[in-house]
Image (cartoon, rainbow, N blue to C red; front, side, top):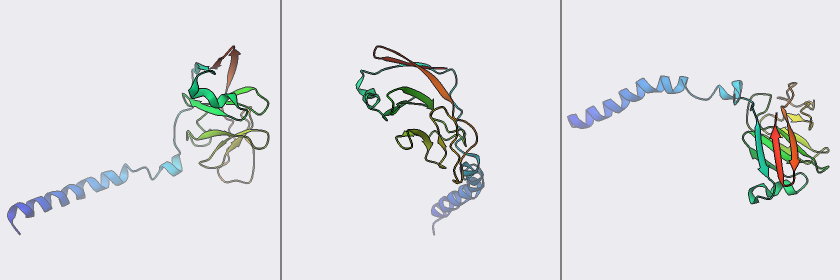
Length: 149
């Protein structure tokens, strides 16, 4: 082996030996234990134009859109409801709306389910939280839907 090749291989090995412990310590293996840790949105105050194409799903009962870490839905009764997209269980931004059991919010990471008022639905499911889901106020003026705290 030539000297240049030897130094290259030694350099890469040495760099790997030094970097591996740091990379391993900085890995996201603890994410399953600590959760997504995304903070629940605060100071929410935005408007959605219901006539805009990107919000077309809100024209249907059970349809929802995601905006600024908020799930905005037209529930099965035709009312607009808004909840945090960030689950109160471990901070994953995976809360969605499902048109089951009269319409619920759910997080598909660990199975937490919530009533439309944010109350947790207790079941024998691992990962279900006792912490409520944050709910926001909604106000409809013509085709403009305001979501706010």
